[in-house]
Amino acid sequence: MSNDIQGAPQPAPQGAPQPTLLDRSDVRVKHATGVGGTVSAFVDRVRSGDLGSLPVVAGLVIIWTVFTSLNPVFLSADNLVNLLFDCSTVGVISLGIVCVLMVGQIDLSVGSMSGFASALLGMLWVNHGWPVLLAIVAAIVVGAVVGALYALLLNRLGMPSFVATLAGLLAILGMQLYVLGATGSINLPYDSALVNLGQLIIIPAVISYLLALVPGGVMLVLGMRTSARRRAVNLSAPSMSSLLARALAITVLLEAVVAYLNMGRGVPLMFGIFLGLAVAMDYALKRTRWGRSMHAVGGNHEAARRAGIKVNAIYTSAFVLCASLAALGGVLTAARLASASQQAGTGDVNLNAIAAAVIGGTSLFGGRGSAYSAVLGIIVIQSIASGLTLLNLSSSLRFMITGAVLAIAVIVDSLARQSRVSHGRA
Image (cartoon, rainbow, N blue to C red; front, side, top):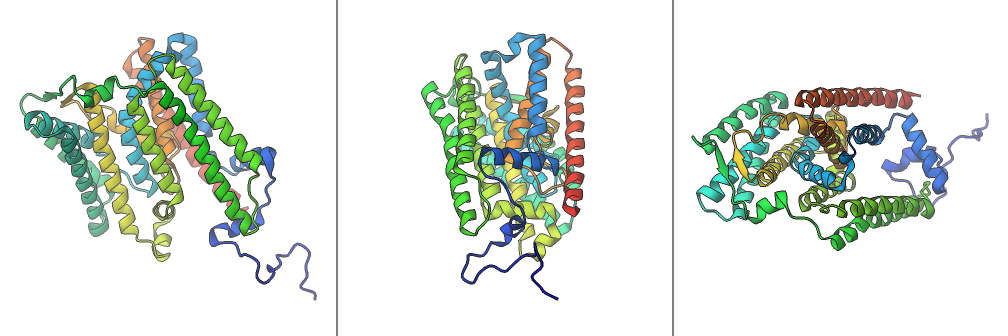
């Protein structure tokens, strides 16, 4: 019987470039090129269960449409600027939550950690006269130490992160109350640069327009490099026209957003810092060995261990980064409120940080998510809060609506996960 069966894979000619391990599965898939091919590939990903940020973007459009129809002030430039100020504090904390969720763990103490960091900042800076930058660094270092302790309890003692961080929530809250003392609050210098950062400082218009050009340019350059690598191993790759179209679309969108915000006060510098952290984390998660290890550990930690990945080190990095970002979020919260008090980090801060990551698209099952999910998720949550405030409605509705949105996000994630599994079997 002849072995030359039609459609059977044939060996590559001798001397031809061989596909890498990551790209071997792509050899079996044929993608069209050009803009039409990009749209077709997107539709295929959605059908296979890879929804990406599509559900949260659709939800955000619905939320904005409803609130704008009820109160046109909602989408005014000044209200959006205030919304971005409020997004920055919890958003930074949510970036850390993305890290621990990526590896299939959880940190329930991020709210308490942020409150303790703000209290520590106030005590060192105001009460003991430390330079403000040194006090900020000290607060972040304490956060890193707490994260390392959680990782130690998980790696050496096998304590579930749910239990370890729940115990940490209570212990850190007690430390926060102890640091603040009988007064219960510490007022920060109102005319200081840190408080101005949290309340007043805006990125100059010219610089904001220039910064809005960067994402599209970076997307184009990275896309060209990836395309060149794929063509070098005889894999399908997006055409230059599709890369240009995507880069142009994101650039036009960002420039339009910046132009609209500049009609009001402008783009808050604190939100720019938040976005900068998100971009840096997204790059680390997608284009570094550490990021690939994070995805692998979250997908299947035992398989990752057998593949030679240092799973304990990955867990440690995730918890340290999460607690450090929680501390930084506490510093920004103190700047926003111009004080450190017993209420900092309590209330819904903890749940909003976790909900923002999940609503934005980070999977509770581990192995999937991105830094941008925290950005989208916190914008959704703050949009709900801002809209209800403008309508003068009870805050109880905010909790109910946010809870419903969170439940829908988890349901969509679960259904998409099942769809990906069934599609893979097919």
